[in-house]
Image (cartoon, rainbow, N blue to C red):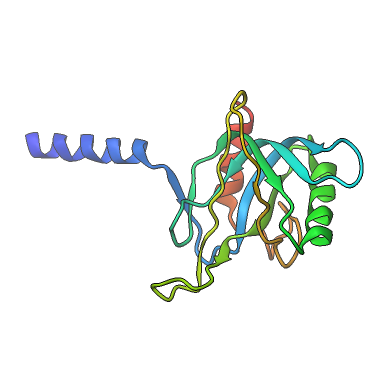
Length: 172
C-alpha cells in the first residue's frame, strides 16, 4: 500500500510541476492574448514595441515545447533589414489588442549561422517581463510566413490546448 501512495504523490507532484506545453510540428513562435500595444517613439515610424498580455513562448533549446502561459509584456526592436515586414506585424498586433482573441506570431525556428555542432536552427528565445521590470528590447522574431495567425484560422492555429490555456490565464 505504501508504494502505491508514493506513486500517486509522485504523479501529482509531476503534474503540478509541469511548466511546458508540447506542440508537434511547431512553426509559430509566440502565442498570445494581447491587452495593449505601445509603440516607441510615439508616432511614425516606431522602432520599438511593447506588447502587454498573456503569452506562451518556446522553452529555450527545445523541440516543440512551450512554457505555460505568463502574464507580462514583450519588448522588441526591429531587426535590420526587416523593417517593412516587422511594422506590418506590429500594426496588425495593435489592431488585435484588447479583443481577447488568441493570436500567434513570429517563427518558432531561428537560424543559427556557423553553429559549431552543425545545427541549422534552434527554438526562439523570448523573455516575458513582469510589469515593473526594466527591460532592454529584444530583436523581434522573424515574421511567420502567414503573418499574424488568429484563433479560428483552422489550418494554421492547430493548438487548441494552447488557446485554452491562454484564455484561462487571461481571465485570472
